[in-house]
Image 1 (cartoon, one colour):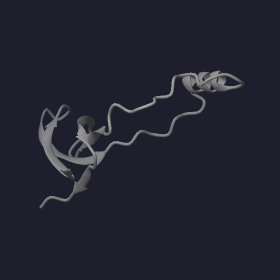
Image 2 (spheres, one colour):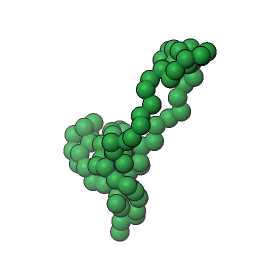
Image 3 (tube, rainbow, N blue to C red):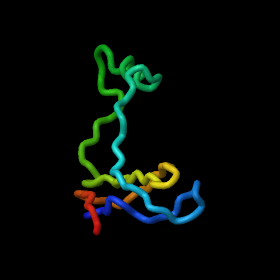
Image 4 (cartoon, one colour):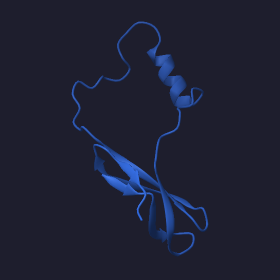
Length: 94
């Protein structure tokens, strides 16, 4: 699906509809020193089975695309959960 690079939508900070730049959200790198990550590594050590059961078959074949919208006027960033897509493509709309 083709998604426009610029969308005119409501900005909560400005309190009106403004132009927003659109980027497809990508999760950042996991922190190896975070408590949950340390706990996971500690549980994985040594002999024994996997900490959590491995999924045998996947129920879904796609992920929901999250759009990151940035207001051009004030710089406020908001996330908008998209729909399930095999392929999302940002395009310049004239």
